[in-house]
Length: 109
Image 1 (tube, rainbow, N blue to C red):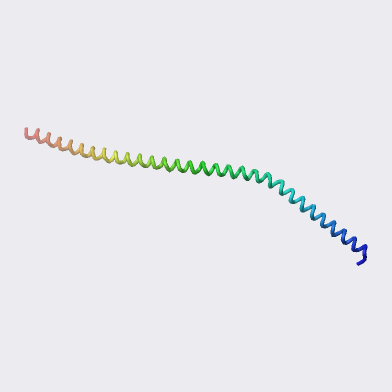
Image 2: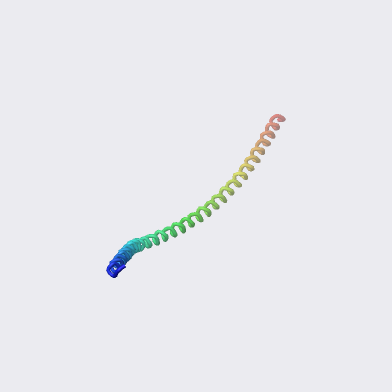
């Protein structure tokens, strides 16, 4: 290889290296510019997600507390209903006894 061919080959190699470097720089600049705005958006989305999770946790806690209160109220109401039904049963039995007594008194009278 003589000197002229060496200079031409070196020039072509340097030109290709420059073109590849420029293209790589262009790609990196393009992605870096987009990823910067994407990172801001991702930060906002992450913050929104965090707030939504906190609100969900609070809602779940509220619902659990409310469910416990309502379950307690239902148990109390059922206990009162049982007591009222027992009282009604006793009153009916007593009324039946009184009716029997009155009928016996009229029959004996």
